[in-house]
Length: 604
Image (cartoon, rainbow, N blue to C red; front, side, top):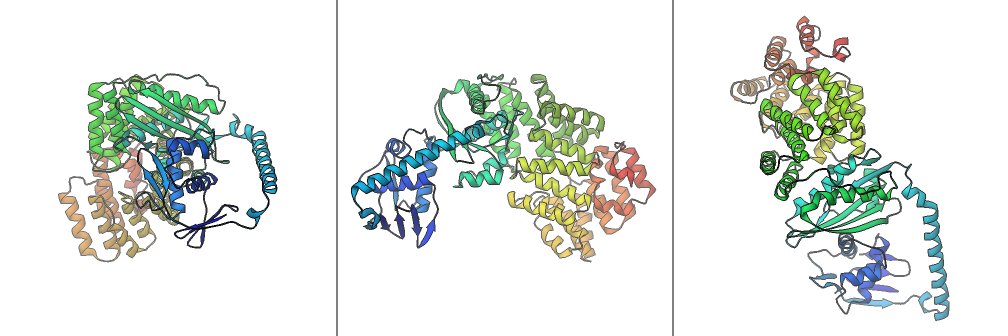
């Protein structure tokens, strides 16, 4: 049967859809859905009827059906706003409303009824045989406990009436990622990678290939008052088969137990050793928990203008209930981000508050691997205490070697300790685990620059900017790489794109000096030193090193050391300081920093 309408042609025998003469690929169930709507175009078809007739006895979540409707519209040149082909009748269902231009039977379809029945029966038997053999052959592959399992938890869809509970639906996905990540026998892709596909109609197989996962968890959340309904499904990506789905109808007063219950059910699907539902060890006041989720929602936006609001929400949560350990950990992470990355809190103030928050977390949960990892980072950034940092990072690794927070902070410890090759190795692992996490590309670019891999560094910084267009401090890092590559015009272009004010001013000063616009460069540098409240002495020292000014380089290195030796444990790796490697003052500075004996700079 050939069906024509608008600019679309559908051939039912060959399962072909053409849009404007060009073939359109769709999943089999999307094709079946389209045909069912066309066959029943004289009336509204309810969601329940669609599920019963298109999916038969297979349980399908609201999210999956919504996604298939969206895919059907796209295949037919339609969308949710126009609805000129598939119309949503709110509260009722869907109706095919396009005018059919022609329906033509092929010669094959004009054969006798008996022949058609025979062929159809043989086809059905053949299909059943294929499906049966697939499950016979692949059952052990899908549920094999010895196979390395990797999962991406997608952003759950907010199905609340007013679509105003996104923080809650996102929070459910995020918390499930965290619970599954605690399980050493499962590799879980990070939130940034999974949420990269949010609100995009990307086929399951494409996501699986890009994230390199064996399974995907998808779902939806509907919250009405104190009632919550969570629909969840587990998909085996190689076959696209939904191997488990379930609906959880619960009251919000036990939401943490729901999360633990879902995580436990996922484990059961893989025949892992923990098969009994275990209630969450945490309890928290409902209002405090929703403040926590709202803060987490803002935190992951990575917006400098929102980070302080996120911190305030957690402080409000703690005033209501201070016994929920994850709040303290998230607060520590937000404080570190606000002070180190987003430049919204004074360095010392932010890190001191972060250490208090981490210690509060460990008082409530002494086996928190991410807490020990973050404590190792603070040991270095606050006190340049390599011994304590190594003790804490080793505790974290022993508790959970596959946790992304643990690996990320281990990377920092390795880098600051001068072990750059292992730092790069860790970063590559992190990128494999979470390929859309932009900060990993920025950090990799920094270490590649230190190692002299300039082209690799530029490639990493470009990926950082691709996944995070604002790219705070990333453009400033690229400027230095371009200067070392003697690509001065490119350095100036990128310097103008930096979004953090004092980094932009420093970058412009360095680029302009390289272009022999020394007067402009000098004015920018002097203004920054004289007026900025956020002058970082080691960066001023670096700017003077790029000018070849050895005396001012050491002047500001010494000022940085006097303020805090911890400020220098990263800066000493900057390639610009090769200018002073031969100077006795450089060697004396390294000795004062109490670096590990294996540090690469001590061997030069």
